[in-house]
Structure formats: C-alpha cells, structure tokens
Length: 396
Ligand code: KIV
Ligand code: ZN
Figure 1 (cartoon, rainbow, N blue to C red):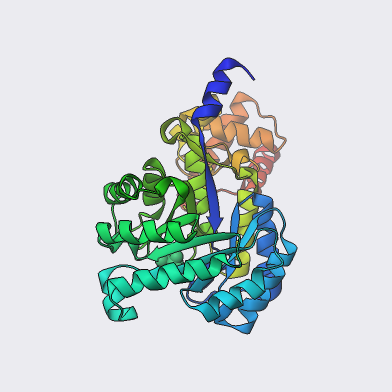
Figure 2: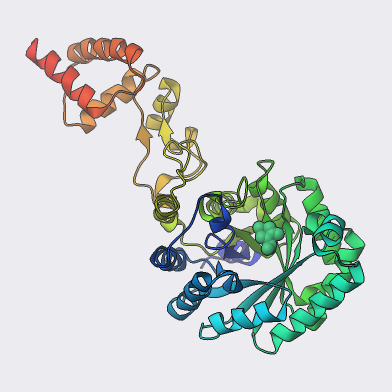
C-alpha cells in the first residue's frame, strides 16, 4: 500500500451496520414475513456484510421466538440480536432464542422522553433510570453483548439523557442507541444531541453511539449521516427503508452515501456494496412493498438517463451525470431510456447495440421516424426500434 493510501486508510472510520429489516421493517403495515422468508432475508443480509442483524422481538410471539432462534443458529457471519423491553421475562425469552448464536447480543430499550415516560410508561424519570440499570445488569449476567436504546431519545431532555446513559454504560451496555423514534429532528439538532452526549457523558468512550432514524419528515438518511458526522459509530435502518409509518432510514442509501462522500464523512461501512441490488429486490418481493422507480440507489430509474442532453453527456463521459456507477451496487448497466427528449447520439448507440449498422442517410430517416413515434409514446422499447429499422430497411 502506498504512503498516500495508508493515510486514507487511517482517516476513514468504520461504521457498524445494524439491520432491523426483520424487526422494525416487519412493523410496516401489511408486511408479514413467514419463517422461510425471514431465514432467506437473514442469509442475504449476512452476504451483504451487515454487522448486526436484529432478527425480531422474541417475547412478542411463538413465531417470532422460533425465527430469531433459527436465525441465531444459522447465521455465523453477522452478530444476531433480538429486541426486548426492560422486563426480565422478555430478557429471559431473548436469551433462550439467542443463546446458541455466535455472539449473543441483546437489544433492550425503555423510553426516556417526557411524553413517553408520562403517558405511555406512567413512570417517573428516576424509576426509568432504575429500571434501565437493573435490566442491563440482569442482561449482562447472560449476554456477552448488550445494546441499550433510549426510545424517543431525540425528544428527551439532554441532561436526563446524559444521566441515564452514564448509568447504563456503568451497568455494562456497550452500545447506546439514540433513536429518533418519530422522525422529528433536523440534522443540526441530531448533530447537537450526539456531540452533547459524547462530551458530557463521562464514560462515553466505553460505548459505541448508534443512530436509528425514522423517516416521517423524509430526513432519515440525512439525519443518520449527520449523526455519523457527530460521532455515531453505528447506523441502524432497513433495506429499502421499510418500517413503521413512513419507515426507517434506508441502509443502502447511507452505505452508498458514505462510500461516495467518504472525502466528507471520513467514514465508511464494511458492506459488500454490490450485493445491495439483490438484497433490495429480495426484500421488495418478499415484503410486497414495491420500490419506487425514483428511489435513490435501488430504484429502477436510479441509473437511467432520458433527456438527450444527459444521454449525450453520458456517452461522452459518464462522470457528467453519474456519481454512482451501477456496478458498485450490483446493477448491470446504465439504462438509456429512449424517449422524445433523446438525441441522435444516444439513438445511434442504441441501434448499434442492437446489432444494426446504418449509413448517415439511413440514420437521418430512421431518427425522424423515431422522433415522431416518441411524440406519441412515452418510452421507446427495443421492439419499437426493431420495427423502425425493418421499415427503413424494407423501404431501401
Ligand atoms: O424507533 C425506535 O425507537 C425503536 C426502538 C425500539 C429502538 O425502534
Ligand atoms: Zn424504530
């Protein structure tokens, strides 16, 4: 490795990826994976290289318990975790489901915002702290790894957050997750929360801070990246951003943003990025949640170029309109969509890619025919080109 590369290697932080497609993702209205589908997705997530797979909420049902257990026993390349409220019976159920895994890991949570403590938990802040500390200590008697989540952290009083985090780290939590449970904060606010916690929690260097953003205001990816900027060492999300209400942060967007802009974030995940498209298609098919065509990174149009100016630029030099190469995420090639805005250059490339050779005269005529067809039809398919070319050849 050259000196230059060595320098780069040192400055890029590795960000852990925590995938919750099978837990928060399955909380999407209408989504219900069966046992085989969960195993299939978990195996693909392992191939994608996620660090941690949240396989489900073992205490929530017999089916959830069984699938978390099977995933923990099958998947060896990623750490498998399960969710539990701060309740001993649920921690026990999670242990039974996870104990045969490679690195049993518990994800235990309790809400810390005034709204949740008062209306949902009906507990005082001191009771919440006591309960959280007891749960983490109880979990640590069994689990080698414990993550604690302060649900609704981003609407929590910051000094209370600092207090509870210090105590759960002392109790043995090694990952502290600060979720934006309702997708409410702005990028500046989440940066401030992470910086404040890092600075004010005296033992913060003993734990990894994790970010878990929801997409209610369409800011989950941006907020996750802002948290990384402010020191988060783990990002949580789902494939295709599926999840409660408007969903979770899309892991594929975060991973690709960190890869493409590592000059800015100085951080990257360890994902095998060319497994992204395959993973996205599998989750879309099994969840029944169609990926919108214009979705970043995995949408069908993410690498398609329609206007003549763009197609011409792409044919001359791809970096004119392409910041992500399709093969980076496992997509075979750029798709040139021929339509009324396409230019001669793109049209010529297209007919040549279909095996035709046209003289300048033929090209002129068939391009005119193509333009008048494109005025009537949104997208010109290969079949349309075959028809245009055979008409032209027949008329010779
Ligand atoms: O959004 C959230 O707060 C959660 C927690 C259970 C981590 O999903
Ligand atoms: Zn969530």
